[in-house]
Every structure is written in structure tokens, then in C-alpha cells.
Image (cartoon, rainbow, N blue to C red; front, side, top):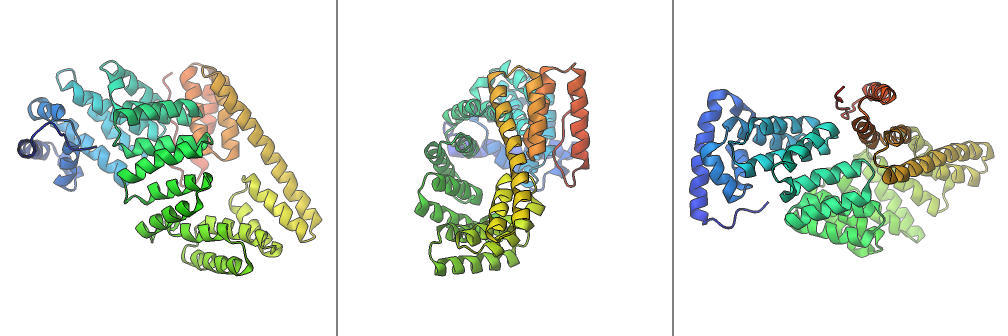
Length: 426
């Protein structure tokens, strides 16, 4: 967000210092200040508020609520975990009609966005309803939360509508542009995705993920030279992070056409894999490179390794089947083809259920079936989102409650899973 423009800089600075001093004294008395590592974090929050909100905060805002908001922003930025939304929700509950309506609205919609982001669907809808009661449609976070919910429910057209409204209300919101671009990508509209993601890069030029997302969309749109430039930018900004550092090498592999280019690209990928042994994308790209170069024995070796790591990826099984067949291993090729066929049938079922869910958005049975299919496909996050929506539509349905418990048990069995199901009111 930009700094308020309708207040003289000198006055705004004086007001901010007064507020910061008052908040520090109040927070020290209640012990919440220990959660804030630096006062600059609090200042960053205050600077993001419109002038009318700043004025209201200087006279009648509960300091506990402000400290909780600061805590939520820090947790969101530093951990990216579900716990980030909880202090924001508590802050929203502390604010009442006696506080600034503008601040109350922004707190509700901010908490709703975080709850949606971390998949807490019931909390998101409750917060959005509270925001609607005091004019929620005037805030960009309101539409971001709605768009994130729509995306989780596989309602891609609706997510575009919501994100477009978010950027209309707040053109300087890089997250809104990024999410709009991602939805366009999923809808198969690369040109629209590029236009949206370019806005995100302009707003956050030092964000490697913004450049990487734009590079993908440029590649989808056939603009390979520009895609290479964005990949290089992402790698330069985060040379120690594997997901960005490997992008230029991946681009070289995709563009290789001669034997010399194949050999050079393969050597580059192998060097990077030694440096980043957990980056499975390097192995996948290397397998594809070997197949294009006609080196099927090497490709088969890499693909066997990948199918062990990602057994639900139908494309890997298809490529393994082709590589085995080209190596003369017919029995192994048939096994791989059979596995690929089963996974494709599951994918077709998932696509069909997604289309039915879009046409029948109030049918909880469809969303329950969609959740099962998504889970079986390995799409855990969207499986949780679909099941939560089913439970919201039919909170008293015994079969859905049982399916919720079964899904929760599956999630509990997953190692290092940060995805959880929020409770549904009985």
C-alpha cells in the first residue's frame, strides 16, 4: 500500500510518532510488545493505513488490537503458517462499534484474507459476513479473500472476477495482480496472465517469485526470450534458493536443439543437482532432455527415480513407458502404461467433478466426491478446500461429517503436513 497522500508529510510524521509512543507504553504494560521484535514493524503497519484510520487510532483504538495486527503481519511474512490469521481474528473481535469503522473493516477483511489463504473456510465466511455489515465491498482484502475461496473451490471464473475487483480498488496491490495472473494461467489465458503478472513485477521488482511466475506465463505465451530474461532475474535475486537458482538452466534445457546444446544443458543440470539434491525439477527436466536427445536408457533411469518420488504423476509414467519401450523392455513398458491409464481416468473424473461443482455450487455431495478425487490425485490442499465447502453447505450431514473425520485422519498420517481442517459447527 502507498503512504497516505492527502496529509502533509510533516504532520503525518508527527502523528505517527505520537501514536507509536502511546502504543509502546500501552503494550509494555500488557506484555504483548514482546511479540514485536522491532518498533519499525509497528510503524510499517501504521504507515499502511489511510489518513482517516490513523486519526481514529490516535484517539480511540484498543492497543491490544493494534499489537495483534502487527503480530499477524509479522507471522504472515516470516512463517507463512496458518497461525498468522489467529491474532488478526482476535484483533477483529477486540474492535467494536466504538472504534473507527474504517479500521474495523480493514481488520475484518485482513483477517478474512489470511483465513482464506490458510484454508480456514468457515472462519473466512464468518469474517466476510461481519465485514459486509459495515461496508466490506469497499475494501480490496474483501475481494482477495473471496477470490482465494473461489480458487480453492475450483471456481476459476469467479476468482478472476474477485481479483479484478481487488486490483480495481487497489491498483498498487501486488498480491492481487499475482493472484489474478495465476487464475488466468489456470484458465489457459496466457496473454491475460502476462499482463497481470507484469503489473506485479513492476510493484515488487525485487521479488524473485514475481519474476518466476511471469517467466512461466511468458513461456506459455510463446515469448521465450522475455521468459529467459525473467528467469535470469529471479535467479539473480535469490541465487541460494533452488527453485529460482535453477531456472536459467531449465530454460537452456528446454531450448536445446543440437547435440552440443544437449550435452551442455545436461552437464549444467547435473552440476546443479549436486548443489541442490532436493530439487526434483532438475531430474524431471534432465529426463526430458535425454528423451529429446534419443538417450532413452538414461531417461528411463531418471524417470524411475521420479516415479518413486511422485507416484501420482501420470505424465512421468507415460514417459517411463515410452523410454522402456524404446529400450526394448516391453513388460516394463506395459506396466507403466497401465499405471498411466489408471491415473488419467482419475484425472478425467476429477475434471468432470470440477465442472459439475461449477454448475451446481450448492450441492454438498458433489464437493465431497470432488474432495475424494482431488486427494487421490495428490492435490491435498484443494481436497481440503472442497471438503470444507461441502461441510459448510451441509453441516448436519452425517456422511459428510464422517468424510471430514476420515480426511483429517489421512492428513494426520502425512508427515510434515501443515494443512488442517477447520472444525465445523454442529
